[in-house]
Length: 104
Image (spheres, rainbow, N blue to C red):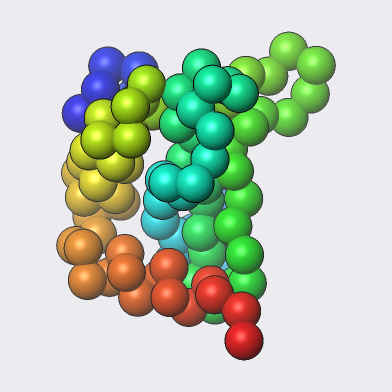
């Protein structure tokens, strides 16, 4: 897992707010994003059964986007490691959460 993806207060706040209400979450790298816009690929938070996704771009004047890799391959590997090691999700569960967020 990348050194830049560590347990932080921001991560805890975002994740705990969803987990507290019993929502299952995962992160996903959207391959179509422009990596030059934020200096790399930014993960999106996905909540089971909630339509759409939330790019982790930060909130407020001093916030920065979460960049998980300069290349798509690097970002996808970091995202997979985060979902597996931090959230305890296997790839099948991640895919199920992603599919549940897609609109009709």
